[in-house]
Amino acid sequence: MTACIQRKGMLIIISGPSGTGKGTLVKKLMDSDPSITFSCSVTTRAPRVGEMEGVHYHFISEAEYDRLLAQNAFLEHATVHGHRYGTLRAEVRQALERGRNVLLDVDPQGALSVMEQEQDYVSIFILPPSFSALRVRLHTRNTDDPAEIERRLRNARGEVKNIHRYQYAVINDDLELAFVQLQSIINAEKQRTIRFIPTIQE
Ligand code: ADP
Ligand code: 5GP
Image (tube, rainbow, N blue to C red; front, side):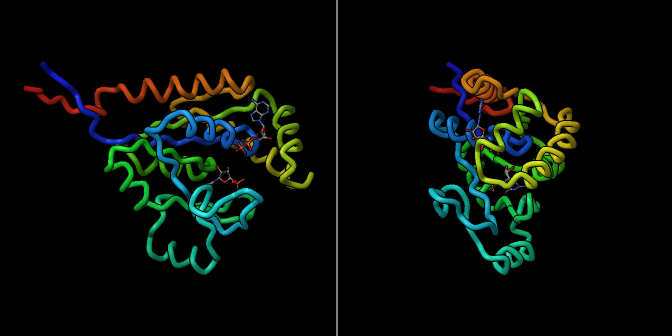
């Protein structure tokens, strides 16, 4: 009998404009799929109410960030809306080697940078149903002032133009539908033959 064991984890890159619902979808995914490890980024921004060190982010000082940058510790890094963020290369590598599926929630600059460096990844762009819906979501979330919201909307128009650099796109209109589509992509990608090595079971 031939049995297949999973060999290596896959790198899942989720990106899209601010306010499109990445964080909401990623949380649902993490709650439903135990094979996925969330890549906990570092950031120089202050924690928001309810955010925990080592869960949502590693919250570090500007000096510590500079030190990591000098050590080439980041797989990718970017300044996003005035704060610095980075994905820790070693954490991602180690989790992949352990066979974990590793999920990055990164801005489009970071996503494109990882896609340029890596061979094997699954990249998914989350789209809002419209720019007006995106504006409403950014206002409803209540984390940014009106000028900042307009800046994010302007950025969003540029980011959407790069959609064809990603393998998949999901329109987050109805949340449950978007979530099912996201799960379907990940579940299908898990079954690709490149993720398996055949072994003969005695
Ligand atoms: P991002 O992580 O992409 O910046 P969030 O996950 O913070 O976006 O979502 C932005 C806001 O939109 C939040 O208030 C969230 O509750 C809301 N939201 C997310 N998905 C939907 C959806 N499908 N329909 C309506 N509101 C949504
Ligand atoms: P927030 O500060 O609201 O959690 O995240 C702001 C933006 O930063 C989001 O678009 C999020 O995807 C992005 N982000 C979070 N971590 C990283 C990271 O490590 N690298 C990059 N490039 N973007 C990140």
